[in-house]
Length: 139
Length: 300
Image: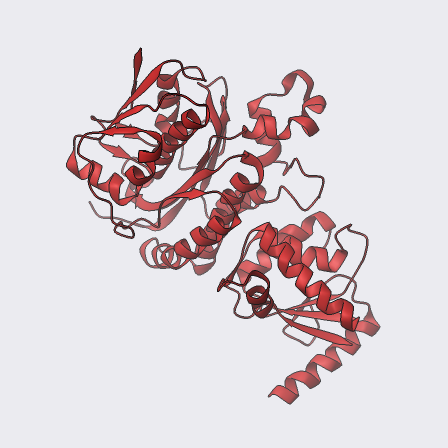
């Protein structure tokens, strides 16, 4: 139902190099395709992208990974994305590239996470419950 | 016939037009001699502009130009530590005493570095990231997001070479003190240069018809820098320069883009450059400089 993606792990697997910076468009494309392949297998309703341990996120990777996962490569498809572990500069990069979609990163009520894409009230409740349970289990 | 190209004594972005004029029309005719004996200083912008000129001449099949090394040992030593001569030897026949440049031996944020592919951008960002944070926060008194933004700006500027230039290019970054401008404040500077197709040719297929007679180097730079226009159909493209513009505005910085015969700059209050300069002496490709001033002043 909810897919958790550790972006730093995907980056290491996708580029087969010890990079911690999500920079350049080819890198963003590789990472997105890895994530899409994982999501296609599970067909989750919500995807949590965890940016913990990512040092730098540039606009190219913000566009390739967050925007194109949320709105599709063609800009038509829509997938709810929850963003976790973002720093201020990373959030700014994502917000900057989201401007062309007429949207922005928004906070998920009651959680530290933020979201991009269609998150209707029912999906929001489902997400909040599931993430709260997961946090309690970890804690 | 050998023609002498005088290297500006103090070669920074403001001396670029003088350098371009000294080279003359492209493709340059005859064998050139780049005379740097009187050079007293060169910024990262100046160093990579010289490398760009040499690279373009080589790619055009011109006879390998001569290059005379600065007579001042300190100046030549700095250029060597910036890895300038290491790269220049590929494009120029060097004359004079060339000091040895040890990799990592300079205090630069990033020595002159060739950008050919996305891997090179990764390498440049990895190298600059830790140094940028230390210098921007400790030395210049800026906040941490400014340091992260600096590395992002470097990444975006370098990617323009890989995606648009059609050839390889150069990047260098350095922190130094503005003695005349900014009342002695420290600044960090990123300089990026390539000798590729330039903004006008890169965007011509999509934009030229829209602008008609007004389509020239200046309008092409404006399309990319101000309106985020890209030659790609993907609407997610073309945002890199726009992001740099937003970043420099937030931190009272400056971005200057020169391509062909024009230069467009987003000019902060502390600088007196004209926002748009046209009909400049032609220089191939594109040259970008990003300048971020610090908060702290340096005592003389």
